[in-house]
Length: 120
Length: 170
Image (cartoon, rainbow over all chains, first blue to last red; front, side, top):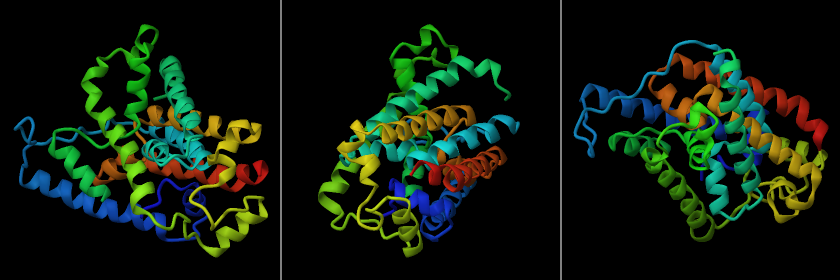
């Protein structure tokens, strides 16, 4: 089990007390980059649209990534959950996560409101 | 498993990124009336809401039918540290009961942690244009420099809170 949705694992990860989380993310990256490499090399087509799969390049810059990333990381260490695990914890019956999901949605909304005033 | 999900989403012409679901939820609830970020047709993003729904179902199936031992095998050092901080179920449960069992709904400290944590994740993920699935997995697999910067940010924030804030809260 990858256990990425366990608050304990996230705590452990930021303490560098175990290889586990790095192993999960590392192996996902290893296979992920292989897959993307082959998709590009073999020009694999999307099965629904029939056109070659293109992966959007992220827009250039650094401020939004660094500042947004830091803010995200703070929340991640507090709640132990990033968006994917939020949904799986809900399904697994850890109902207080609904509070996290609601305030995360609210946080997204507030970002939308102040977006134009932030450095990007 | 994660890379298989990445492949399946790419193969169907989509992408792997969970935090945009939060943006879609805002749009569905009418956020577009006030804020331009949410003025898009959320119905085009229904596939991603389906992914989220699938994740919810997956969580249900995994917890009820697959995992037999739910305690997470974290290191002894972590367990000792957490127990010293007052989190006694470290090493015995999947997630701390203080935050993730029903008692969290009536404990002010727990609620504040959940609300602040959630808010920062939602705000930060949209600001950075992605969370761990969009940046750490998809972006890095595609060798995108912005994603590396985002992941560095994730760690700066996470390490700061983990080492300086969490000890104060527990």
